[in-house]
Amino acid sequence: MSWTISENSFWGPLDPAADAGYPEDRPKRKGFFTDTSICIGCKACEVACKEWNDVPSDHFDMTGTSYDNSHSLNANQWRHVAFIEQPKRLVTEGAGQDTGLRGTVDLGMPTVPPTGAPEQLANGADDRPDFRWLMSSDVCKHCTHAACLDVCPTGSLFRTEFGTVVVQDDICNGCGYCVPACPYGVIERRKAPDGAKNVGIAQKCTLCYDRLDAGKTPACAQACPTQSIQYGDVEELRERANKRVEQLHDAGIMDARLYGNDPEDGVGGTGAFFLLLDEPEVYGFPPDPVVTTKDLPDMYKRAIAAAGTLLAGAALAFVGRRG
Image (spheres, rainbow, N blue to C red):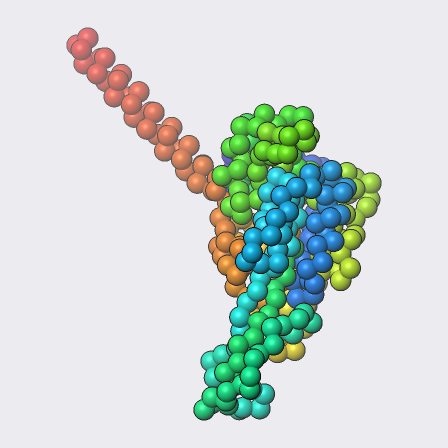
């Protein structure tokens, strides 16, 4: 492993496994492509993740505001399927006018039926509220430039030969530096339940490192009944994602977009990226994430320059007093 701070260590596209020092015969980078347009919210991925990785099954409470009972990613929730209930107004087919209102995407999910006859607007649109469900299975992004890994003082967080980021439970000292470093708010120290393993140390998705090492598919992707979660080589998944977006655009679903697939973005692209049907903020994703350690090289240079200036000043003062 190299500890040299090069100009490209904290941003820009690169092969993270090669950057970490793995030889040329390393396996190709592995990751997830999550196509939310075919997610049905069954949460099979959550169950499979907990079962395979022995993640505690607690904190399942209904909030009263959503059918989502697992709330968010955290130390005890390495996969989280978001249920987003989104009101939309339908555009009457054949109206022939641009109403400025977007139609809904049929995800095959139940909707709230309108009460009474819909009122027709002057522009032909139904004044009838409707809803759509957006389902998305979130997970650690396994960033190309992982700030959690950069700030770990013990080396507990490390880059695997598959380009993923994994916590070594027996080395983590629970300092928590990685928690605020993550631009997605994924990693967290386990606080409960009492008696569970690894309480007090950082926990997150490992992309089932033990299964990858045995040539198997991660448990969540293996359990997904609709292939919304697709596992494979990252470069091949990116090509597959681009084709899927083109397919949806051809079908008139112009809101379809990719998130996390751009190697030129603020984290150098992610190993787990998504096809979304709305803005990233709707799904709880930061719209423009940036690796939080990006400015460390400049900070070091300025600190060294400041220290040098102070030493030079002290030396001049000492020489002046002796003269």
